[in-house]
Image (tube, rainbow, N blue to C red; front, side):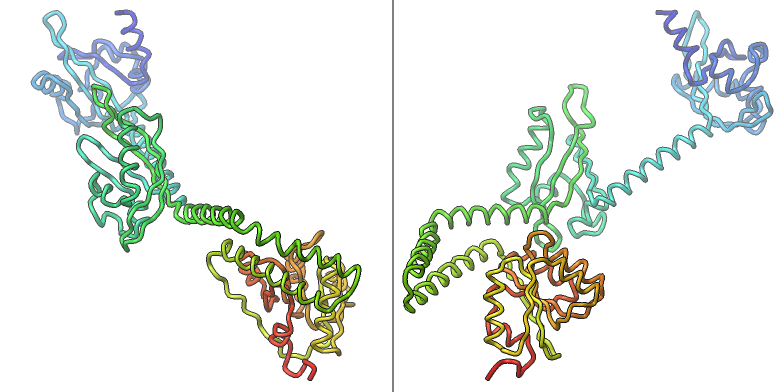
Length: 454
């Protein structure tokens, strides 16, 4: 054991020196390296010789006496002159220990330059952590379960709409901020973790903001301190704002449940008009009767009604579908849609509205782009589908805007997705979002007055 202690003493990176009342007795390698003195020089020295005079004339005896009187560590700051005449600011920690009727001092010397460097590194690490927390908008909290000493970072306060330190953090304050529906499970989850009945502490709950609304948050924490009995007494954690993510998640959950309920109760309503359409089309192949068209229209109306109901479920928030009318005369229209049936239908629709209109139909958006690049496309307006094979309508718009063409575009689509409506507004060339079918009324809203036939 003595040999182990001796080896630890000499191999320590901390400069240590042992002395009696008058001089140094022995020292470790780190002390020799710090001072630069030889063994012979150190053997004949004391703190009197090392410390410069402004520290005191009899520093060694002062350290010795103060340590003996107190019986524990004595700390003194002073300047030491090393072998190369350099002066080093130091802090000397000393304790006394008796041995064979004599009292000795054991001192370790700290170089203030290294302390300053360590403090700077600690400060820089703290700043990095602070910047990381600010960048990710995470709140930091620290709670001592024994003393109730609680700390919230500035980001924590700001997340809830408060100014930093606007209220005094505490366990009771945290409980009061919890949403009534989340309070029980949040408290129980924390207690289970502190009692070592859970391996981790990760939970989502709502916290009350200053304006009275509630914010969904995600919290993770870790025990960082225990008492002598091994019981957790200090816990540190982070809190993250997940309000938008959680609300979207809950919205999708509601929508899915509505769709499940809707499909269960309305599957017959959907199958019935489809079966009727199929039967009527078969009859039309065999014979024509004008009354059949009325039956077909009824089926189409039923399907359209069901589509609107599904759309209302998927889009809980309505989005305005503004259509901007044109001021300049329109003589030629380019229709871009990969479904040939729509080519036939909408050419007839446009012809019935104004038989002087010329409509060119394209199945591939790339063909239209190439014509624009070559300046061979003659058109006053573009009707554009968005869900197409090959190049989609969105991809077309990205390339079309780069060409800086002034031809107005109207999206004509069967999509009822609110995100498509919102996305269309991002393109300055898009003057309207039209859900199929294209009607005479929509054409009247778009085309200049006087285009419609009398």
